[in-house]
Length: 328
Image (cartoon, rainbow, N blue to C red; front, side, top):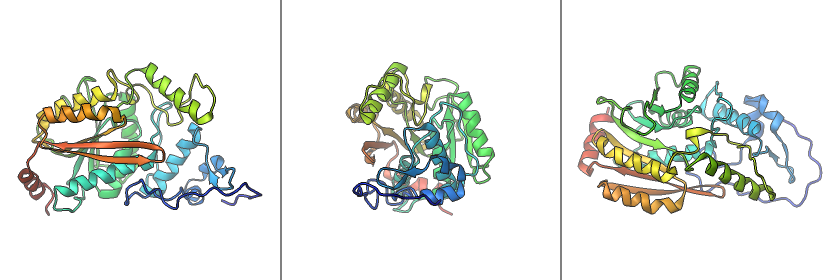
């Protein structure tokens, strides 16, 4: 894409790499917008020079973010068909990729330092949503199989359509309904399921009102003006954004139920967005007698997050798991 460039203000220096992202993350560099447009020409409608004559998009425009995601998923992950229903979560791809690469490192510690790859590795994505992004990235990066669960039937219908319309995902992603919104694992996993890694991006807020208030405050800071009725540039609705008790309560329920599946799941993990929730979550894991607990810091731009991972298996059981399930 050729863009006419005129005079610009003093050039703003951008870091050559987003060093806060994982070393294997394909998105450490600035978005190659001209290359992305070659693969997905519809993106060009949203790309223009910013104040410094750098090509950019308006990240406050939900349509622009959607087009960017489609271009990224095609360019980096070979996804030729990707749609999401209106108002469903349109996730930031670099951060989702970071999570996958970090849990790959955790799996490597159970395999003598080598990341297990291929469809013998099965991950469970709690709250796969309509976007199916964790399975997309995990399958492309490491060949893993996925089970994606959700309580939203519309989201699951769309996730199944993504799988059906991309040959690389067919037979690799099993999309399941969690029939009881009060449970995480119960009623979802069967006695025959063996899960190597659980990933989860839990609902952040405790109510719809809190979700709207938090978004309004964030956008008011960004735009330096009072915004009462925000539009979510990354979308999201219902269980994607909030649940009773918010993030901490969701993760506590997840920890409580995980104990019952501690012999059929190697590692459990979740994102923890609020640092103030971390002590409560770690205390819950200690009380549940997890044999190992890990906290991995993560960051993207100005946003700081972390993932927490835990297991109920002993080191000897980890070695046996790798020998039985991953050795070929």
